[in-house]
Structures are given as C-alpha cells and as structure tokens.
Length: 177
Image (cartoon, rainbow, N blue to C red; front, side, top):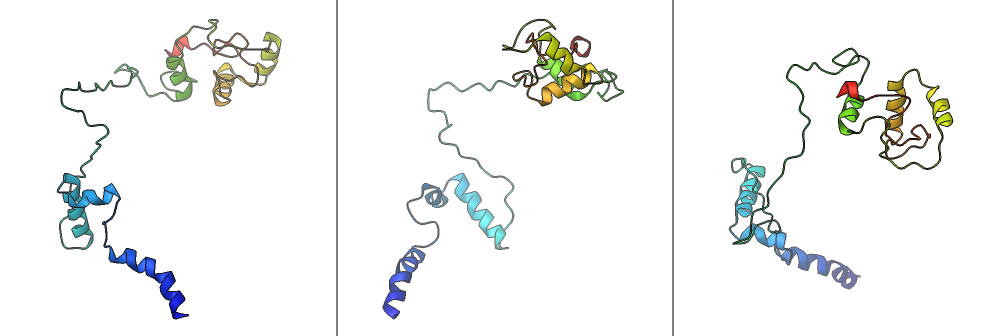
C-alpha cells in the first residue's frame, strides 16, 4: 500500500520541489529577469505579505505591440464623436426634443439618410402590412423604438420598413438632428 501512495504522490512532490515561478512558462521566468514588471511583481508580493509599500504603477509589457527600430509608429485615430451644442439641454421626455428619448436622438444622428432613401435591402413586406403593424402603436416614436429594439434597421422582422430607409410609421429623424 505504501508503494502505491508513493507512486501517486511522487510526481506531485517532485513538482513542488521545483519552487514557485520556476519552469518553462515565460510569464514566470519574466519575474526574475530584472524587468519593470519583475520589480512590480516583487513589490506587490511584499505588500501582500505586509512587508512593503503598495506599488502605485502597474507596468504593461506588450512585446507583440512594441515597435521595432526604424519602424513607423502606428497612429491612433480617435473615434468620431457627435458634437453637442453647448446650449443643448439634456434629452428627456420633456427636454430639448419633447416626446423623444435618447435612443431616438442617438439613432437620428447615427442614420444620416433622409426618409424615403432606400438604404437597407428588404425582401417581401408591403406598405399595407406595414400600415397594419403601425396601427398597433400609439405614436411614430413608439413604433420607431420598437423597430430598433427588434433589430432594426438591419433586421425588419415585423415588416414595418418596406422601403428600407430605416424609418417606420412616418417617423422623421430630421427634427432631432
């Protein structure tokens, strides 16, 4: 029985004898190479054990992203941001655009085409079916919000946008722009 216990525990004890952070994993070997991250790691461990100060900066090493000598730097292009006038009021149900919601305002700024301009390909669906669908909503704003929530304008599962302009039930985005 003792022989079987030693056979089972032998590999575990052998691995334990190797020591922490010693092995083939390059992430572990970096802890002992004098890099900025190795210094941070040692400071962090000391702080966790209560024998040192908490490090204030975590260095990030991304060797795959590091430029090489003579290689041009990648230019970071900021994302396009909608410019909101400084005199604009917050958008609420009774705010700058009465009756509208932030979802509709954002959608109006996102979709730049005017009503009637076919932008999305539609198959099937008719104006009569769209009119029947629209009659179930109390307003064009409610219908447009439901259209967006159902996957519009890419999807039109209810057939509310037969002309493919991205706007349903007579909703017009131009006043919100």
